[in-house]
Each structure stands twice: as C-alpha cells, then as structure tokens.
Image 1 (spheres, rainbow, N blue to C red):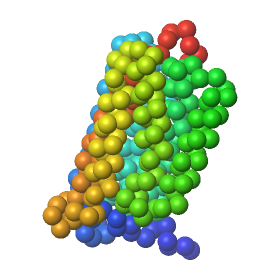
Image 2: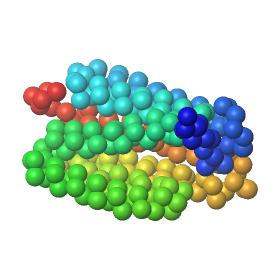
Image 3: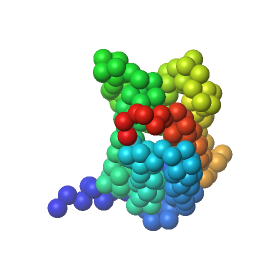
Length: 219
C-alpha cells in the first residue's frame, strides 16, 4: 500500500505538528466561503437569477471552502487535491460563464482566452517554489484584471466591481506569498488572511455575474 497519500504536508506557519487541529485559523476561516456562498444565493434569488450556471458557481464556492478545510486539517496529498481541484474548476467555469453570458464572447474569443489562461498557468507551474507557490494564481489575476477592464468599459452594473475584486486578489496573493517568510515575526502566519480575501473575491466575482445576467440568456 502506498502511504504517501497520508504524508503530512507542512507548508504554513501555523502548522507546528501533524495534529488535525494544528491550523485552527487556517481551518476555521474557510467558513467564510460558505457565508459568501449564502450571500450570493440570496442575491441570485432576489435578482431571480437562480440559473444552472449560478447554482454551479455557488456550489463550487462552497466546495472550495470544504476542500480547503480538509487540507488545513488533514494536511495530506489527498486533502490537498480536494483543495486545489475545486479552485481550478471554479476558475474555468467562471471564465466560461462570464465570457459567454456577460461579455458575449464568440467561440474564437473564448478559445483564445482559454489558450492564454492555460499558457500562463503552465509557465507559472514551472516555478512551484516561487512566492510560496502563489505564482500558479498569476494567470487568474491577469484574467480578473482583463475582465475588470472590460466590465468597466462596457458600463456593466456596478462597473468597478471586478476591478475591486482584482485589487482584493492582489492583496490576498501578497498575504499568501509572505506567510512562510514571516513565521518568526507572526507565528500564526498570514495564510488565514488569504482565505478572508478569497471569500470576498469570490463574492465580488459572483455578484458581478449575477447582477449582469440577462433573463433572456441561456441558463
């Protein structure tokens, strides 16, 4: 039997032992993803936009919180996969839905968007140790800023929303990147603040999506 899937991954300041509750702040701040998902659900219901795409994005948001909780408690490779995979899936689904339903991209534009995203993701993946592994989010930041500029230029509802989300993303990435470098000064680390920023980020992204869905678009 391969026991490598149960090996404890210790890559955050807060974890000092292999115990389940060695990262209480990193674990409990994942509740914020569930809270954010609930607020998006309320907004979507108010706007009468509880479509299949909205439901799927809300579900992925909640799954991100659950997966991250598993990783910051069990801290094993299988738990890491439960953390990473929902994030990747959310990124792809949000890009597809937003580009198709809000920006009205054609097929060629969507293909170009995804090729650029995967290209940047591949490059970032070649440097897993750089910025405490945060470089893998560089492609998502670029897309968020790109969407934010288009969202503003097209004068969508709450036009600054995605630009604000991009700023939150950059702050969050910074906090994630400096976690291990500040262990002596801040024993609890800064990774839990990354969770706080990411829950706000996902709420802002989905708020922009829900508020700008049109009832005559496909669900």
